[in-house]
Amino acid sequence: MKQRILGQNGPKVSVVGYGAMSFTDFYGKATDEGSMQVLDACLEFGIDHVDTSNVYGMGRSETVIGEWLKRRGGECPFTIATKGGITRSPDRRFNNDPEHLTEQLEGSLKRLGVEAVDLYYVHRRDKAHEIEAVTETLAGLVKAGKCKAIGYSEIAPGSLRRAQAVHPIAAVQSEYSLSTRSPELGLVQACAEFGTTLVAFSPVGRALLTDTPHDLSSVQDIAFMKDNPRFVEPNLGFNLAKNAEFRALAADMGVAAATLAIAWLVHQGDHIVPIPGTRSIDHLREVAAGGSLDLSAEDLKRIEEVLPVGWCHGDRYTATQWEGPERYC
Image (cartoon, rainbow, N blue to C red; front, side, top):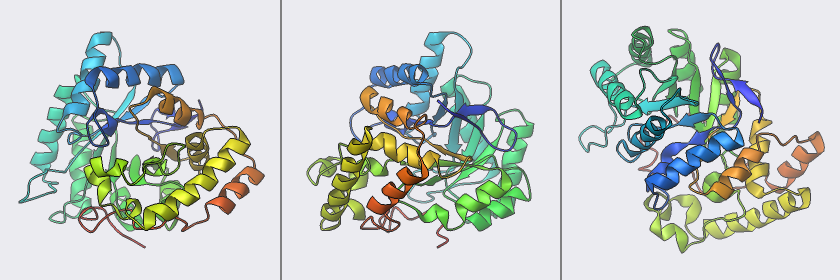
């Protein structure tokens, strides 16, 4: 597995990380024992960066990781990132108050069973606070020894520039894949300029870039996806047709579709780290393989011919799901 530097002066991490939202029931039923087996498999496949959040299963994801670490009884083999800032409260969905972020990080550390996390993100911006002030809060948590580096999720390039002027931003997390190319309109470039790692979530397009995409029936059991514009008709039908073309290309190249999707993303910049999430060991093996697959210029051209920029039908979020992420293009 290739490695990359996390942030400007951070640790080396595997070029493919793991997104631990899959340790909850967000995309389907998960079991704690199954999640711990996934963590075992991450080490087997060379994945050493795990990304979680305090709201993934309302603490369940962090608790599973903490229990896995406790069972090992030794030094943590992972670079761990977690997040705070989403409240799930109908009165105030996002909270970047200094007291709130500090309290939420303390809770995360307790569940994880560690003294500090390697990376702490603001999960969503709170419009009540300017990003400079929030960055000062995060810098204080670094100084207090609660986290080693800081980042933001779903912010615009302009916001990154403002935050970077206050304190080094080690990572920005954003959806980025062959089906979501919007980060190329400024975020990929700004992250490269500042030495900020672009951590790409949903790198296989919520299965649209795999050999086992969701059909209309299967998404009905997933609350987030059943109304998502990309997974309702007629958009889903168009997207599945393109998926079939991509699967055929991957098969012709001798790899799984998910492997090819991850490899394409890894080749978009030395500062990009995808964090696929899955409950399946077999699928984990496929995405991990993308971290060591070399693609030629001709390979990349063939991929772009099958899935050109803008091929995916439907917005990536509903109007409600767009509350919080910063749009910039």
